[in-house]
Amino acid sequence: MFTGIVEELGRVVRLETMADSARLTVDAPTVTRDAREGDSIAVNGCCLTVTELHDGAFTADLMAETLARTNLGDLAPDHHVNLERALRAGDRLGGHVVQGHVDATVNILDRRHREHWDLVRLGLPRHLARYVTGKGSVALDGVSLTVVEVDDGTGNGKAPDRGGPSFTVGLIPETLRRTTLGIRAPGDRVNLEVDVMSKYVERLLAAGSDREKA
Image (cartoon, rainbow, N blue to C red; front, side, top):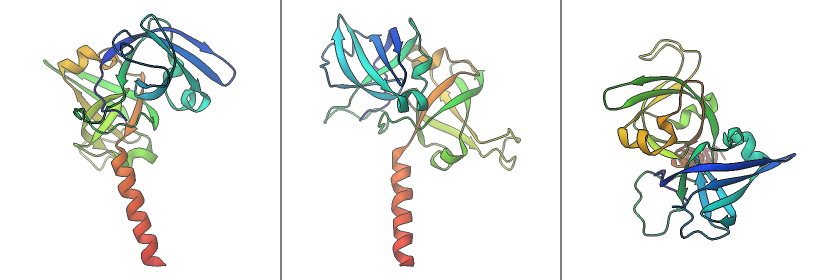
């Protein structure tokens, strides 16, 4: 379990690709300071298990599902990644409840620079649109963010028809400085995890409706 508060920008040392998996090594002196083999570290919002530790770096295995669902397969040496250690019981929950289970990758559609912050619009897969709401929470590349506005893509909302659902987030100077979102550009893919609470609510409501019909 994570909170979406990035602790360190790690540097990719290597990504070894195999037939249906890969091994990722990241230089990360901060998050490896008290890490042990078997610990969980979120890399760009994806929960990975530490398999090796060496000189301030860690290695983790990436299965086919991870490569298919996240942007970790796009990494290359010297790329930077957002890192967060797993939450300890009793720690402050600075962001929101983040599982480290990426739902999909989404593309940055446009980015508008303001004097002190950036407004970023991203595409939203239709099957996930019901889980994203204005002033709700999402994790983008492992960063906990508040949704500014959601556009259903039909042209019925405030924005014109843009060919599909989208949503916007605001990035404050601290986020721009301390995470990879500061350098992301239109066309880049980022990992999206929607708020898991909305999934539980949907599941419970569906179960209640089924019982009423029985």
